[in-house]
Length: 148
Image (cartoon, rainbow, N blue to C red; front, side, top):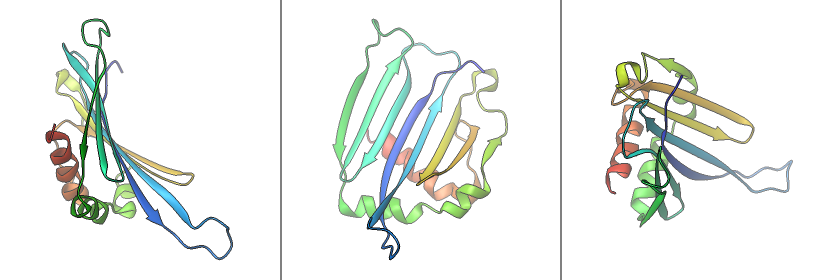
């Protein structure tokens, strides 16, 4: 499949106390993005929520004409808490795989990936499509992206 990705990534810290391990925290990462197979301009982006920082990096097919650009915003504690509350690993795992026809007829595609420790779940779906079990998370990720 020929496409570029608009990557929207969000890091969510989850503290886990373990009696069997000297480590006291594991981290979970949410990565989400959109992509279009035929695009002019900035076709790919990567957004990462890391603690209080939201960072969006955009790239184009032609790195000379559209050099990578990165912008950052600060997130409030309320923003971070709201986002973290929407992450449901079981709901994400239940949707693993491809839904619909992402980027067919250049309609674009989106994806969300959840990684915690060695486990990873990836969901791919049509751009703008809402998947009911994770609708609130999708809306929050899109709202974070639109802040730029």
